[in-house]
Structures are given as C-alpha cells and as structure tokens.
Image (cartoon, rainbow, N blue to C red; front, side, top):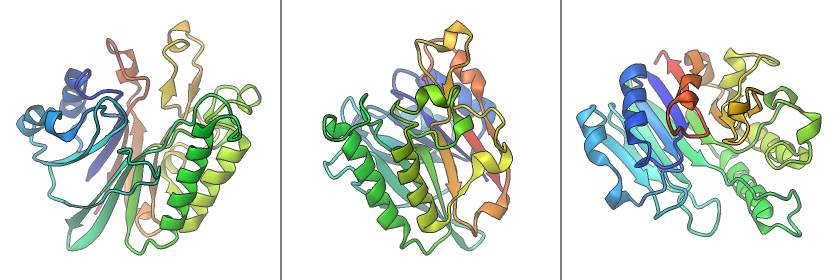
Length: 262
C-alpha cells in the first residue's frame, strides 16, 4: 500500500499537477493539505476518473483544508478542531486492510505567523496550543496509526539549510521543536522520513518561492509521515518527489511517499 502526502497550496489551481503526480507515482492514497476549497467545489471528477473513488474532504472557502483521496475503501471517522476555532485542518479515516485497522490522520498544523513570541503574535500561540491538544489526543491512541501532513516544523538541526540562522525563525525555534517532541513522545511516533533517510542526509520538503530559484537550496523539512511503533516496521520504502517543485507554478511543498507491506 503506497500512501502519499502533499501540501498542494490550492488543489483547483494545481489540479493538472495533482493528476500528473497521481499518474506517474500511482499511490493508493493521497493526503492533501491547504486545498483552499469547500467540499461542494472540490474537483471530484478528476479524482473519480483516475480511480480515487473514495474521498474525505474537510475544506473551507479560500483557506486551509485537507482532503484524503483513495483507491482503497475507508471510513471517515474524525475531524478534530485542534485549532479550537473551526478551521478545517484535520480529517481521519480508517482502512480495513487484511482484516486489520489502519488509521490515517491527515493534518495541516498552523504556520504560526512571523514572530516567535505568543505575547505579540497570537498566531504563534495558537500553533503551540494546537500541538498541545494533539499531544493530549496522541496519549490515548490505541490503534496502529499513520499521521501525515504539513507539520510546519523542521525538528532537527539538519532539517534546515542553516540551523544557526533559523533558530529565531518560526518553524525551527527551540520552543516549536520541544513542543513537537512532546507530541512525538506521547505516542512513540516513528519519523519515517528519518528512518529511511537518516540524519544528516538532505531531506527537505519546502522551499520559499523567493529563494528556491536562486540555486541556494534553502530548504526546510516541514512535511512529515509518522507511524505508530506497531506500524513503522511494516514500512518498506520512503521517498520525496522533488521534481514537482520544478513544475510550472508549483506548490512550495513537495510530496512524500511511503510504501507499506500490509
């Protein structure tokens, strides 16, 4: 079973790119973040034509939103409001594969604004609180689970192009890294990106529109696929698809793909 995740930064704007990715990579499941569309206007027809007949869409007009599309049947069972303000940032589905549960959580964690201080930047505080609510949830997980999406945090020193330069930049500050680590420890999540591409190997998933084309490779690893301890040993391969960042009018994120032997 091949599962992919991608912050598409507007699914309707980049529908042809999604179709190309699905055709070339042929994942069984694709989790999209930042779809920027409410469910009634989601481009269902294209996914239907390509065989992704099972879809869970948690969207809103113009902002945020997540979608999980699949060739394999699933049951949608949760939409957590970890932001605590009604924004569409999560959808959870349950697969029955070989008689066993596989829970897939698709999440879009807030970026957190530009200033790493919750006293002057409420968005940064909302991001930290979002992660704390996720942590309380993770403590209670009982089934094999895969959580994927745009976490908007690069946790390791080698997950950014310049660790010292970015220590005060939102997405790599110590408090964000520490908060994400508490979430990881709450369930013992296994970071599949670093299981298959060990640190300090280059493993970026995001480049600013302003810097990528300067050939400086100023990337950050903001997108992740984390598995429950019981599920992680079933992962057989993992890779990122950087070529999408070079396509015309691309998303600033690239897709990640993990293959499981279920």
